[in-house]
Length: 548
Image 1: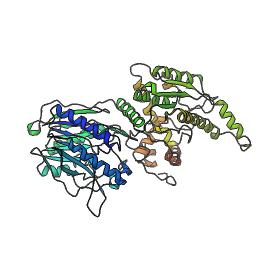
Image 2: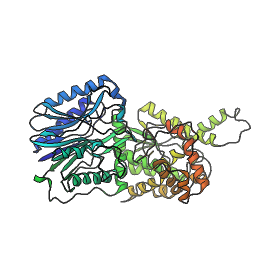
Image 3: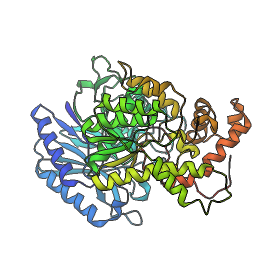
Image 4: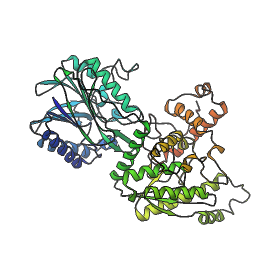
C-alpha cells in the first residue's frame, strides 16, 4: 500500500484555511499515486484549541468544515483529525476524533481513548474518551486507527505507564494488520528520538507495520516538529518526514509488513534542532498573530544576539528592527558588538540613549527617595525606560516586541517587570544560559555571525559600573544544574546538596525561584523546548512557603 503522510501546519480556528490546505495536499498526494492519505490530529481546528472548545459555534464550524471536506474526497480514502460531539451522558460534551472519508462520505468516526492531562496537555477538561476500540476496514484491510496518546502506552517501552489499557495492543489482537496514528505531538529537546524509539518498539512488539503523521508548526508556546514516520513490522524506518517543515511523506508498505529498505536516521545535532524549533516558533507566532515585523532591544549581549539571529532567519532581516538603548553604564564594546551584529544580519539598527530620561525620572523621585541609598530600584528604572521605548516603537510603527531573557534569568527573577520583560513573545525563555552559549557557537560554526567578543565576555546587564551576572548569581553551570534538577525533574534540596552543590547556594537559588513566581505569571509566553517550561505546563502557586 502506498500511504501519503500529510505533515501540515494548521492555524487554530482557521477552518477554511486549514481545509483548503488539506484539500490541496490531498489532491497532490492522490496525483502521485497515494492509496491512503493521512492528516494530523485535530487538523481542521488546529491543536490545541483549548477553551475555544467551550464555544458551541466553534465546534459547529468545525463540523461544517468536515462535511465540506468530505465532498472533496474521492475514491482514495483520507483520514484526518477533527472535534466531534459526544452523546454519552454523563460525560464531557466532545470527542477528540478521527474521520475516515471516502467517496464523498464519512465512512468511519474513531475517538481517542487515552486523554493526556500532564505537562501542557489538558484534554480530559474537554473530551470524553472512547467507550471501546475496534479496527476500521479500509479497502478490505483492517486498520488500527489511533490518535496520538493512544500509541504512547506500550508496556515494554514504558516502565511506569500512565494508563491501564493499551489501545494498539487491543486493536492488533482484534486482527488489525496496520497501525495508523494521527498525531499532534509537541517537540522538546530529544523528543524526536524518544518518539521514534517508542514507535519502533510498538511495531516490533505487535509485529505489524506502523505509520504516524505528526503535525508541524507552532501555536502559541508549543512547537510541532513533524518527523512523520513509516515503519515496517520489524521497526525499520521506511520513510521519515522533514524536521520543522511541511512535508508530504510517501511510504510504501510492503506485502507482509516487512521490507528491505535501509533504516533512515533522525538529525543528530541538538543545537541545530533547537535552532530550527525556535525559528519556526517565531515565524508562526508572528504570522498567526497577524504581525508583519518585530523589534527588540539589541544590547550587545549574547541573549539579544541569539534572538536577533533567530528572528532574522524566521522572518527575513527586513522585518527585524534592533534598537540599542545605552545607559551611562553601557560599554563601548557592547555598542560596537550590537552594531556589528546588525550589519552582519542586515537588520535595521537604531540607537536611543536612555541616560537623560533615566536622569529625569531619578530627579522626579529625589524628594520621596530622600535618605535612601541607591539600590536595585535605580537599576530597574533603566530597564523600565528601555521597555517603555520599545513599546512606544511597537505602538507607533506596529512591530511585535520580542523579549530576550533566558530561562536561567527568568527562573531566579534576574529580570525586570515592565522593563526587559516587556514584549509579546519570549523567544528563549525555555533555554538555559549554558545552552545559549552552545547555541551561539553553533550559529558561528561556519564563520562569525555573533561577534566572538559577545560570546566570550563575562555576562552583564550593565546596570552599574563593572557589574557582572555572577555578582548576585552562582556561575551559570552550577545555576543551570540546579534548575535542571529542581524545575525540570522536581528534585528536592537534599538531592541537590548530594550532588555536591553548596547548601547555601541551593537555599539561595530555591528562594529566588519561589519568590519570582509572581513575575513569571506576568511574563510573555515563551517557546517551549524543554520537558518542563515555565508557563502552562508548570502550575505552581505564587503565595506559598515551601522551599523543598
